[in-house]
Amino acid sequence: MNKLKVHFTGVDFSSRTGPNTFAFRLADRMRKNGHFIADEDDYDIALVFIEPSTNINYKKPFVQRLDGIWSKPNEFKTKNTRIKKIYDHANGVIFQSEFNKKQIEKWFNHTKNKNVVINNGIEIIELNHIEPRLEEMRYQYDKIFVSSANWHPQKRLNENIRLFQYLRDKFYPNSCLIVMGNNPEYVADKDIFYTGSLSHEMCLQIYSMSDWMIHLGYADHCPNTVIEALSQHVAVICSDVGGTKEIVRNNGFTIKEKQKYDFELFDYDNPPMLGDFDDISMLPEIDVDNKHIDIFDVCEKYENFLYEVLDRSK
Image (tube, rainbow, N blue to C red; front, top):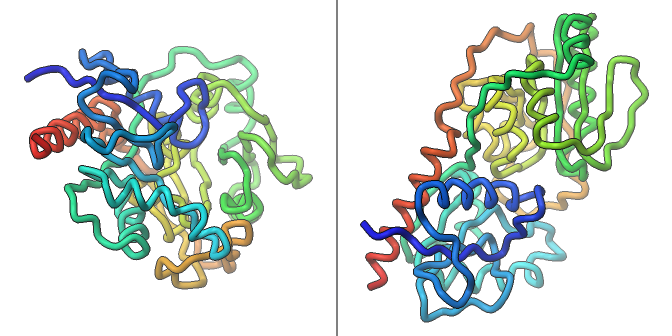
C-alpha cells in the first residue's frame, strides 16, 4: 500500500492549545509510520481540522475532523457558516466523540458521506524522573487531585474547586488540588496550588504523581488534558454531559448534571452549575486502563479512514 501524502490544514503546529495539540501528535506519528505531511500544492488527501487555514481545493479529496461547533445562540449562524460548508462538501468526516457527532448531526444534519468516531490519542510513556519538589508533595499529602485547562467559563474551575473542597472536608483532610493552566479564577485555599502554564513534560510529571483528576467542563467534546491524565494512569471525575465520559470509560466516574442536555444551543460563557455532591462517597481504587488512547492505535484508525476515503473518491 502506498504511503499517504496528507495535507494538514486548520492547525498551527507551533501551538499546543485546542486541536493543535492532537494535530501535532497525529502528524508526528504519521511521519514515523512513513507517511508524508505535505504542503497545499502536492498532496493525496487533506485533513481539515474544523475549517481550513486557506481556501480548500474542492476537486481533491478531503476529510474534515470536527471538535464541535459554535453553540452560542447569537454566534451560531455567523461562526458556523464556513464550517458547515466544509462539512457539506467533505469526502469524509471524523468526529471526536459520539457526543460530538450527535450535536453536529442535530444542527448540520446527517452527513451523506463516510464518517467515523475516533477519540484523540497520545503517546503512552512511563516517566523515569520527577522533580524533587513534586516528590516532596507526594509524601506530604495522602491524596493529590489535579485539574487542568485553559480556564474559560465552560471549564467550570469553580465547580472543580467546590468538588475538591467537598471531598477534602468530608473524606480526605490531608489532600491538595493542583490547578494547571492559564487564566484561572483564584480561590484562596491553603490546599490549592496554581501553577500557571507549564511545559508538557512538567504536566506529565504532575499527572504521574496525582491520584485523581477533576474535570467538570460542561459539554466538552474530547479534552486533551483528560487524555494526558489517563496516559499517566490518573482516574478522572467528569460531567455526564459531553464526550469526556466516553474517553474516561471505566477509569473514573461521572457527576450527574442538574439539567438535562438535549444538544440545544447554549451560552458557554455561562454554563449551568452543578448541584450538591451529597451522594458522592469515598473514591474507589481504580486500575486505569489507557490502551484506547494510545496514539499508535489512534493513528492507525486515522490512516485506515483516509485510505478508505481515498479509494471511494477515485
